Length: 195
Figure 1: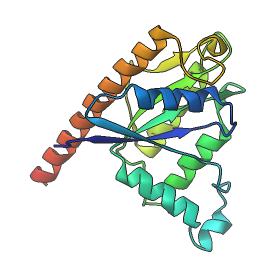
Figure 2: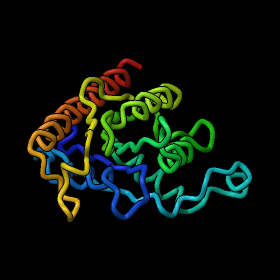
Figure 3: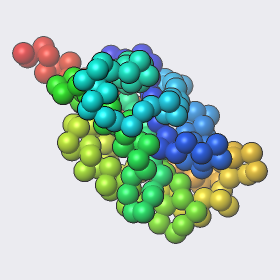
Figure 4: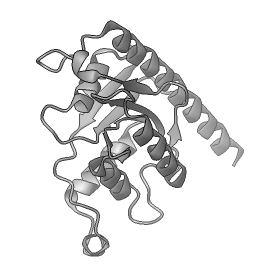
């Protein structure tokens, strides 16, 4: 049984003033006592290119895969660009599945959060990411998505989440992610014992 659940946070936005990255920072303040959150920047990742992969996996990709492997769960901050997943996040997930047959995402518990200045949060991008999750065998936590709408009113000038209702929703989602991760880990352990 896991004593501490290690969560790796990835944001699909590179922008310094990103509300989605700010959500990850808020989550790091709202964790249950038996969890940790490490936020991994994605700025240095090259776009996926099979020719680059054929020459050897870039060191930055190997480092990302090692962090994903070491994490018990992922917390993905999902911006929505034109009704879909931000290319930065999709690119990171694509690299994490390479080389073929050595995916760092296989069986990984995942929770989704997202913030938007619009009225729909990032619902379409999160739905699209669920399709990606099927292809990568990530186990998405259902029913606990964080969709922060009209987000500019919920953060202060220093990008600190000030909306109490949203903070409580994140706190509850993180508790559920820890329970989900423990449940998956226990099930995988039981399957290994049977095999």
